[in-house]
Length: 225
Image 1 (cartoon, rainbow, N blue to C red):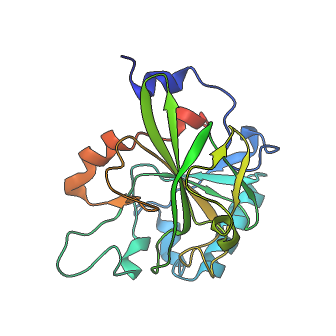
Image 2: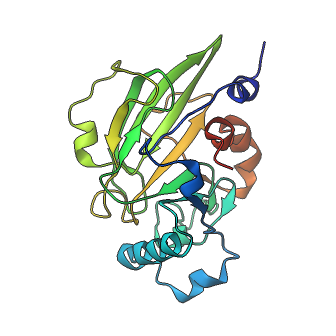
Image 3: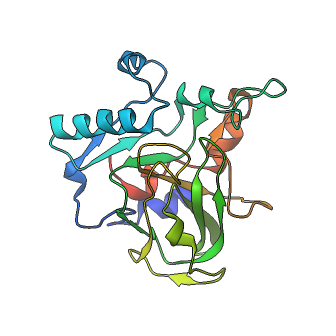
């Protein structure tokens, strides 16, 4: 039986935001705790954060900033959703973020059906979220699309089919997307267990090995870099 990662290697031409933007117009964004530039910013302010990203895009003549898989970040410290006194800190990002303006079309990565959706409206959470279920050969897996606009989950139903590249949603702004600069959190999930409309996108160090295995690098599918 082929692994999911092997099946991904044979796939081409996959986009999850605005298909008119070539990958040559994508630029990396480092949001790790080691990026000293972030110390000069109030990253809990989505407006200031968005200006930082816009300046990065302009500097690099790019349309989309990407990154974040297996990245240790400090920006989750602001929210008790990720940190409380009774649990280990969750600060390692296990999806891929694509930073682009609100209202940008979000596309289904592959043919799939709506597994579940939900508005995860905690501070720093996904906001409106859609999870699709896919099958490649004999492998069933899921893709998660987080930080969407509210209207994206207003008229869909569990079981709805979306073709590869079909518009699934729109990106939300900071008022609905968990209080972030606009971006898509895109994540692959092998075993979703009983989760509906939500799945951890940030994990603790002690659980990292499990999540890296269960949530492989989305770039294996997208092939941005």
